[in-house]
Image (cartoon, rainbow, N blue to C red; front, side):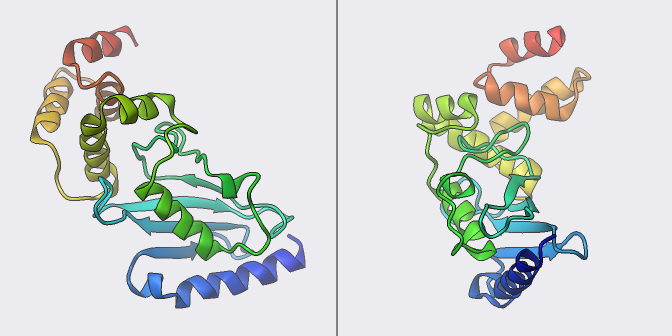
Length: 200
């Protein structure tokens, strides 16, 4: 990895460690390998959102050309959000693509992702199914996002009604993750979800 990139990442890594947000347990970053090409980020679900109380792990890969090109970031923790793929964790955020500027840092990336959780952009979706639910049925979106936050990110318990539907389908022998994804994308309609699970 180019020297400029390594020096820059080391400096930014320290900036995150010393930041007020880290001391308040809002953001966090760890080294995955010693040569600073891969980091593990973590952000807290913002207050007053369905993600509140959850902790979200991020894979951060630093390109050779950093800081002139953005880091490659994806969610490791599963999340139900219009701008994040519920399957791969890929993120649709302008600063990680064409709006990146060399002045941005790891800290600004983590804080921008946290802000994205609080303010989705459903008209520029990464996950069309989630974006559709967000626009058509905001209450169902909130409940679904909260359930995913509980199951995958350790947030406090959510909708007992949705939990019961999951348990009923799991009792039929289906895989829990498959059940959650199918119910979430089929508007929590047990009949439609069951048909889809049986056809796979």
